[in-house]
Image 1 (tube, rainbow, N blue to C red):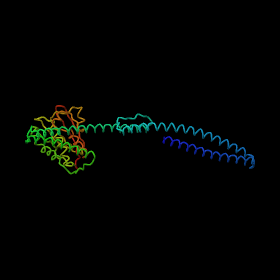
Image 2: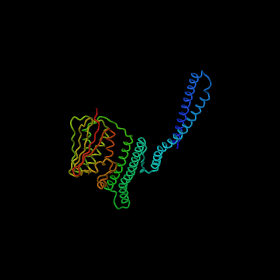
Image 3: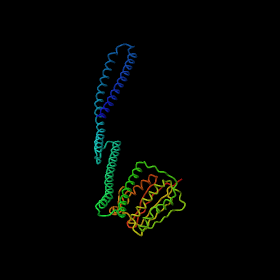
Image 4: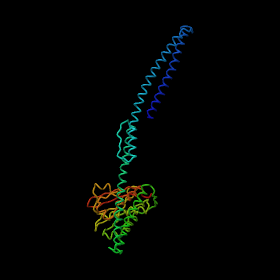
Length: 358
């Protein structure tokens, strides 16, 4: 309504201003013309007065009629223009109110020129993004609840069994409880770090870090687990690599998450290989395993929160499906990128890059 009134007001002002200006100019020209005629033919006599006044009156009537017609046409055009502009805006407003109320499926399909089309496309893209984020949020809440429920249920069952005297509070029971607590602590820590990275609150203390030392450190960190799982750990680091510009703690965490993930999916007797090589201005790290591999349809999703290509196996091993997400977020916080290559039955290789120290 406001847009319609504004257009009408603009039309009225333009029409009236144009009509008054044209009328004043016409009257001035007509009077000048009659004065010239009277001076040239009648010696300045007053015989032309009534004729000139009648002509001016006729001109005024003509301009009045023209102004009225222009006014009617201006009002009609203003109404149709305002309606064509306000209709898609009203539809966008209605859809926005629906989204505000929680209906993220609302979309707008209107046509009203290039600008309106661009606005509609931007709105629909925003609505789709909000719908996707809402679905991810719901899935994440459900997955977190599930991950918390399993170890908590185990802890509760074991404690109740101890209280009832079914089992004793021996070292095996304590070890089992400690393992469940470790799962909970790891999940909470991963979620906390992921939220800090994605919100930009994590500060990286970047210093020169030798790639060979970082890769070797990952093998040392998991030496006991590798030995218990009967998995061989190898390193292949190119000679003469420049140091990387990284936070050593976070780089160690990325490598640790990838090695731990590889251990989970590599059967006894398998091999995990950690490497590093120069790739332009980046140092590219890689963690390869001879495990089960990942199906092509799952490969693009492995860095998403709580995604599992083998849900039953991950549940059994206690993985929360968030380690790779944390690793990706930390790599991107350093200005690098991460990717994965895999073939079912032949293993998986995950690559990530960190800027070389200049």
